[in-house]
Amino acid sequence: MFQHHELMALRDFDTPTICNAVEVIAPDRRAAGFTTSPFVCRDPSMVPMVGYARTAKIRATEPSGRAPSDDLAARVAYYRHIAESPAPTVTVIEDVDDPAGFGALWGEVNSNVHKGLGSVGVLTNGSIRDIDMWAEDFGALAGSVGPSHAWVHVTEYAIPVTVHGLTISPGDIIHADRHGAVIVPGSAVTAIRSTIERLEAAERRLIGPSQDPSFDIEQLVAILDPEGRDH
Image (cartoon, rainbow, N blue to C red):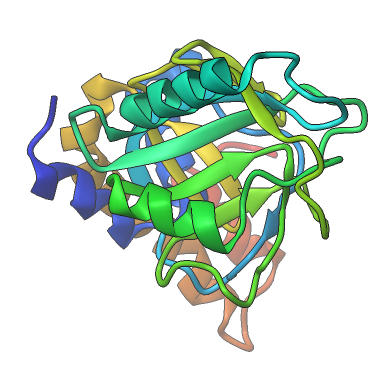
């Protein structure tokens, strides 16, 4: 578990920049550990969501088939999982319906309830609704927007889930913004800032000259190959 300020420092960077740093710190992660399909972002200006994953699967096309008392017990147990330490958390929901998003778990009520339990936002392949009445500063990346909750219910929780190509387990460190989401290896958390500083310095070597009207291919080659090898 990391100090709160260590995780919050990751919000200074967007998710693509975090991906760049993870590729350097953990080279085996270059082709894994991030979402691969686009989301609907409720608020593109949102601060990146950073936290420990809390996970569940949902279904909405048919009733749960459980007795009302069992439905209540399952709902309470799910919320207890969301409220578990450490915080902050990111709620990750896999919608197992076909099509996913038939009914929305997420709207005015659950955004507020989850925020109250320590979650900073949701990552889901399912749908969201009430998008103008969402909890303040509660992030959301979803598969779609829809009007109804239908028969939505939690079928499982605290298990690995897969959302838009990314398999996430409870406790994984998630960084997500309007671009998508990435799992941040624990080994990378404290090294990310210094790694990004080095990467940005290297990028400036290309970006700065390319913005000069005199920039041409020979300047680019000289930057890419300062030793002047034959090309």
